[in-house]
Length: 399
Ligand SMILES: [Ca+2]
Ligand SMILES: [Ca+2]
Image (cartoon, rainbow, N blue to C red; front, side, top):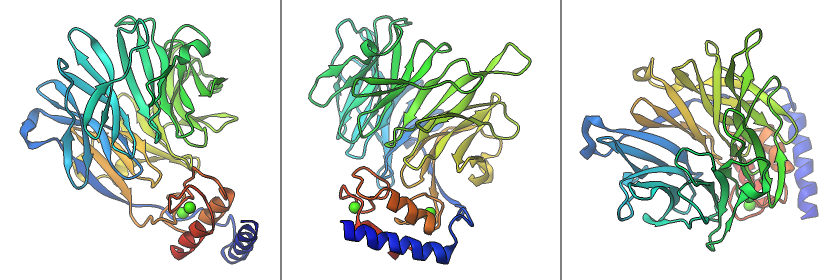
């Protein structure tokens, strides 16, 4: 491995001289647009609420027929596939899904209210109740089947408590390890790290929970609260918090990025005052919505917030859009109007690790910085290690 690394380092040096490191940020993507529409049986009254997209492009969400939301998946081959209800349950929503056909969310029954559910290969089962549970929601699932979410003992709170459900049926009540009396778990990465918030919105603070250790994420400068909505495999967090408007007593939401050290205010798109973030990928690209109150989906990358409505066909002019999720390939899932929308970068191949639609020195440097890592965007062939095989795959994709 050491010899390989030396070879790789020499390659980087050579290419850096040729390419001029730092002289340009790389390409700019344009996007192919795919619309997700409801099953035909729903008619005109239906809409698809897109929630999450896996690294392999499967989508989870819910579609609504006659006011009763039902969980569903979508993939390019099969279109929308409804997920069944448990006996006695009549509404459902999706929190997230992973790449091995496991979907989590919650189902509603008139006797039990909302209860956390997992669908495995389309078959639903309830997640276990923490003692005293009267409602529960599953928000996210990682590649190993670890789930986070929250449970409560009153329909209108207080009493929501962040939790982990493990594949062996055991649970960790994260609320016992967090400050304050209430909390929600909202995302879990492939290392089992969880983000969410403790304290009730709007007086909440974002956290990172890592195997019993808790980091309280600093508020945005001039911020009054925070919630962590998504966590990458780098342990970086995207979320939003309330910030005070200068010269006023009001506060408004702004999206933030926590890079492990600093909480960065992402600001807004031009013409809007507010923003929230919904997802982050492993190269620190964040998606969300900037609004006032109608708004546009955004992608934040390299310190710049990009208006994703610029990439949509004219039929979406004037439509409020929200970017819900982004995967390792830079594919972005939007909710817009009554449909889900996938934006797929055109010309972003396997070697384009940073999803800018060019394979160049910045991708190579990223691969070298990830050398030997087991969970990484630079593990191009997905064999659990970043090594010479991945380097050769990147070079084969060069340009
Ligand atoms: Ca690239
Ligand atoms: Ca590999």
